[in-house]
Image (cartoon, rainbow over all chains, first blue to last red; front, side, top):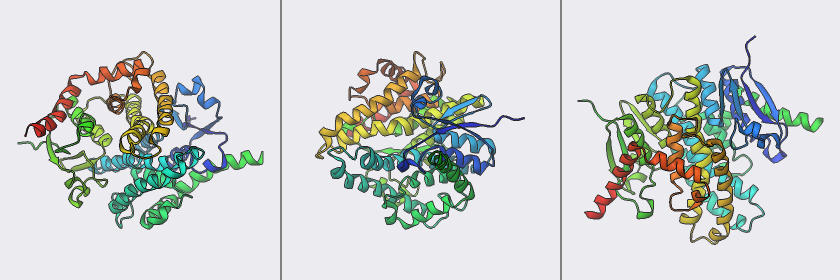
Length: 219
Length: 219
């Protein structure tokens, strides 16, 4: 019997976080790869324990473990799962690095702006600067989204017709804006996210992620 | 005659930005690879032009162009230069993805906290929240640095003795704290950064970066 790759996810997250946790990215990559996997559910206290930090220094999820590979960072896990399975990464060397470039762009050039909004509006909602600073954050984020919309143009995916790991990560990052209304001003990006999230692999990944908390609520 | 890889950098940056611009990362990777390269210096107006945005949608530098590969994102450029040259990326598959994981961790789990400090203290210095928010930002950053120091332990590099692309990027990201005093509280990280910056390849890259502005000042 072949041992399955294992990832970690949370036993429970507050309702506002459901649908946004990064195990979804790993799950999505597995589904795109047609790769069965196992999930170890861990709680908010174990995730900060030395035992878990041995695998994830920042006390977060997901982690990935399989066949001697132990990694953290959702970006690295997605890359590894897709590289191993040979999916969502073009064979042509120039197209391959272009796809990886978009994965990194999602994580380094877009996500910090998306996270800044969540940090300000959710995690710093009770801070004295939260309301005053909100328009500045939306403004900075909008500049990035405008640039990204220009780059996407009228293409299906960032590099043309083929959906790559770069699109997986960009759709996931932009999906972090769900519920904020920010994408209403960027209809081509909203449609791009909707196309990505309509992929059967994403729907399965999201459903499996949400099912953990539906089960917890029912228990 | 073989054509050299080309990157873009700025003709001029304000004094506070010198030594911090991301062309240093690309230069550093080239130096580690022993790969000669050419630099196209562009100005602050060209970088925002459609002609440049065709290569860099966010209107930034560096970009990389060589042999049909045209990419942006310093993380992707560093990865590509090192992969192409076969340096700073272990051959062993598990060690390889661990190195890439640290590159991504630097860009997604550490740099947003470093940038948040620069944004607040430099770019938002005139905003009403800047002074009030400063301690919160240093606090959040310190949590990450504490975790990172624990992960590094007493090792030379993040994964042991061998310096990888992950270390190159982490040293570069932490180098963004130069002058802030924040690393004073993390002596093992400060020493790790000093070791990385003392590598001949980094010294050459930094000197070549700074020389552009010394020349500009002398002109």
